[in-house]
Length: 227
Image 1: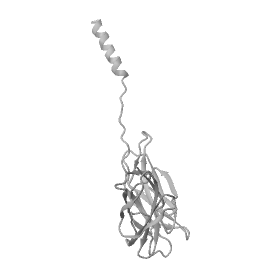
Image 2: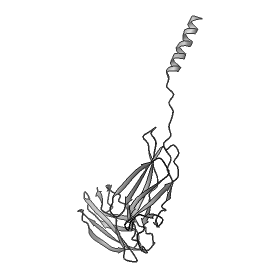
Image 3: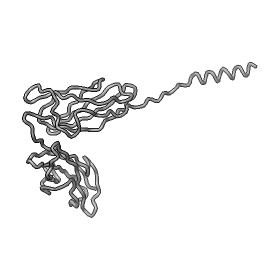
Image 4: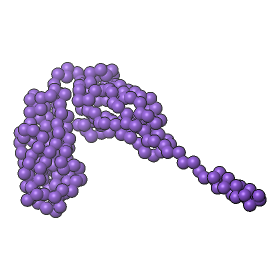
């Protein structure tokens, strides 16, 4: 009897010392609401001839305790980041400028965060009737990508968008310095195939987007490497 009692006590001690590990799920993706994607935002509160307050809204993320709102001026490249525990946040921005934005959902329980989709909008200015295109987004090659040419050639591709939906064409620049030269003017569509390159070389490239009213935008310089 003492033998069985001792065995019981040992088992009880072992199980009581085991830690119960609780799995904590990361936050789900927040869904963006306002300002709308790829549209001109005229609903902001004008605070000066050059500034207006834009209200950013999104839906709740499950398991999130806070949100980090990131806004990028697509012309200057300047990024603003603000943290909040609510689902909307007014931010004062320069008028007559294109922006992108996304929301990162966070929790203090784990380090894993979840990033929303990225949306773009144009903060209208005084007497705005035509808007410059959004800067082109590079698809291939991506920033700092390493690619292997086929028979000494690669394809460049990108996407363009515009509030007025009147993109006319693109100028493509490529070179081995951070001031690439024009290799194709007035390209129609978002791809340029059969571009000749040299293996083992660092390349810089950019895309200028032009609309039917003569407005332009600059993608900024991207870099890639050939194997």
